[in-house]
Amino acid sequence: MLILAPMQGLTELMFRRAYNQCFPGALDSSVAPFVSLTHGNCGGREQLEDILPERNEGSIPVIPQILGHELEEFVRMADCMGDLGYTEVNWNIGCPMRRIAAKHRGSGILPHPDEIREVLDYVVPRIKPRLSVKMRLGHRSADEIFDIIPILNDYPLASVTIHGRSGKQQYGGSVDKERVFKAASMLKAPFIYNGDICTAGQWSVVSGRWSATSGKTLAGVMIGRGVLYDPTLPLKIKGIEGDYTEMTRQFVTTLYDAIERDYPHDIPRLRKMKEYWCLVYKSLPVSESAARAMLRLQEIKDFRKAVDKAIIGN
Ligand SMILES: Cc1cc2nc3c(=O)[nH]c(=O)nc-3n(C[C@H](O)[C@H](O)[C@H](O)COP(=O)(O)O)c2cc1C
Image (cartoon, rainbow, N blue to C red; front, side):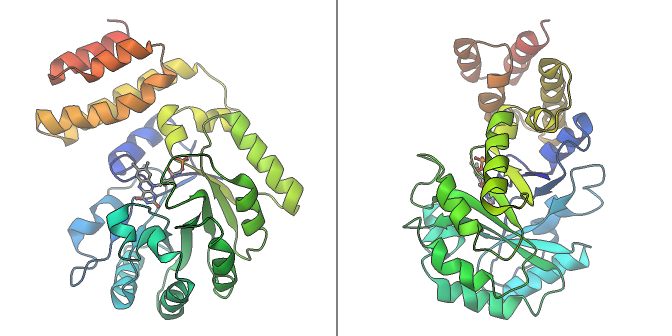
């Protein structure tokens, strides 16, 4: 099972819809970027816009994600998601952003296993959807996970996704696969691997390594940046052949057309296109210097023309 990782500002509905239009079924599932628990405003339509079922038709199947630890708000939000038809919600205890972690949210809760237990104790028996968890190895230290797994094992979680970095590492350094596997082998819930899968070879090393250590197959591999660098990566992993460059060209065009539709103003429109461009150009026949020069263009029409020229050749 290949799952698209949640990436705030990148894997929202517009991306997921364009992706599934070009590569139907290539990604089996996705987790939506987090919805934050804010006092007094849980489950407002605006917060849930990205996961409204009618808007997600024809898109990659999606699991909503919650960030925060406020007990009553958590239950209210999960039940709003349940009322929309979701049978699973995901709890984000991996986000490393300083201002978030400082409030014991995201990875900031990982050094406090007692607080994790308090949330699970309160939330799990009260909500209708099943709960899954997405976490890092720890916040300050990559060993924190070993105090957390026994707690997670006390609850009937749908799955646990582990990203092999600590919060302090943010996205730097390398993923500690060995520690991930060690922690995952203590886990009762189905295990989903996440972190630095950018090639089919890396996927196969991780899957093979897990089978060899645990005798089990992975419940899933969650991929974020790898899909943004190379949108055809899930096809390569699944052994679906084709003209990958041409497929990537079509996808970029579909995505940019969607951005043109969804962003009425030029400045945010251009910013959005550039956000994707600086990742996806790596899998197109565009030189690094040409791609970087394009990022300096200030007018949307110049940028779009340059992209068309670079990828379509007209
Ligand atoms: C820009 C950005 C936004 C992210 N937003 C979220 C988020 O909303 N929820 C979450 O659980 N993880 C979020 N992540 C973490 C990713 O889901 C994923 O765990 C991380 O990128 C590692 O996987 P990868 O190496 O396959 O990209 C984000 C990461 C980035 C770089």
